[in-house]
Image 1: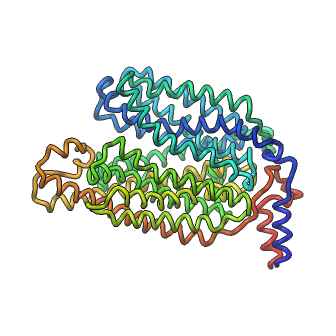
Image 2: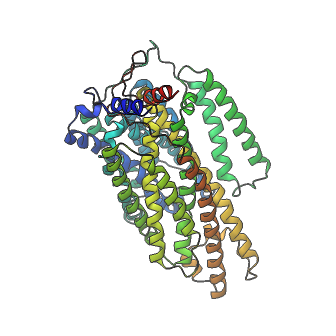
Image 3: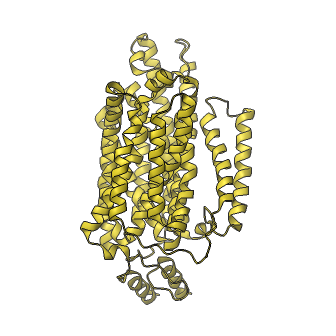
Length: 542
């Protein structure tokens, strides 16, 4: 068995001249990745720039009761489009589909900028979201084609550096545009960045792509249609539930029924499709399923909990909106450091199994520490907790995607990347909804038992920190205590959910990382395919 493992490991690590990464020098790779960095900046900046401009948009276009749809339409469209873009990349080439998604995103940005009423803006935001759905999955798929899994850690830090830059620049740019220019420039600002990204990608990014064996490519439009139905119902249910409608209302229950029926229908359609949007066979691969499950758990816990952290910083610790954004920097910098360091170690050693275990442990620990925060918790202590949480994020963000991509054949790279990204986004959406309901329950309970006036849970979204200062001191104290109770509860439950990811991480199998992106010949095998290598090991063991 030991000799078999050694032989397979050596075969999987053998260099190949046909790999994309081996044909390019480090300088050529960095030049090509510069276009991806700009596209990543587009994806990260958009909502951060648009958010500060929303009050001004409402004042200009009207339609306050439809304001939430400006965000919901974008999220809904981008979530649905993500797996579809991934599959189209497998069918027609990742460079072509990635550039197409950027073009659609830019057209949507321009249309949003010329909107004359709220209805137009919502429709154009949905169109923009369709393009946005292809940005992240396109970036990850192109990197997967450009670099072999073994090489990726050397360069991934360049992409990770975009995240803290967006965290700092987004709110500042959005605030500056809102104060000194028209809100329309919150959308127009995407256009010059996107044009530069398109030019760099077109001129420097050269990927080899082998078409599937069919003479005529059959796009799974039926699967895409059914996917749209059940995901739309799910997103609307978790967005409206507890807000516009009660969770037990006919509207929400109806959406839940549509979600379940639509999901079952989608699975049946995908089983029969020639080129399914989400290949169900991928979930038969152990490491892919585990990596996707960890991505769901991480999305649920991270995005769900972090969404409410600014509430604690602003209402309890007294920070401004801008300061609360900047105070997230310890978490982001920690995530970057651990992602870069982990990537370098994985590239040098080829071993990655420890990183999801360490990542889920640190993520859970960070969330548990946040659950201990109270009225007297100083900002410095919160920053230390963020470092721990960021370390967990850094160990997980790159590694789960790496494991998922390394688990599948190159021809399924886009579908696998789109599916894992889609599941992680769903986890984040469900996390925000579920933890938001827990937060609302605890805040409502605390306020209803205080006996200091008619303050309801709506105050957490409609009452600003500045307005809180105008209330009587007794009311301020009760309100801060209620917010602290709510944030403690959501971090506790988020930490509990992370336990499932921690358990799953122990079952990840150490499959040799590809050192080449050479296509695998199903008839002959190359010895460089990790799935093939793992099956060979198991066969020899038997």
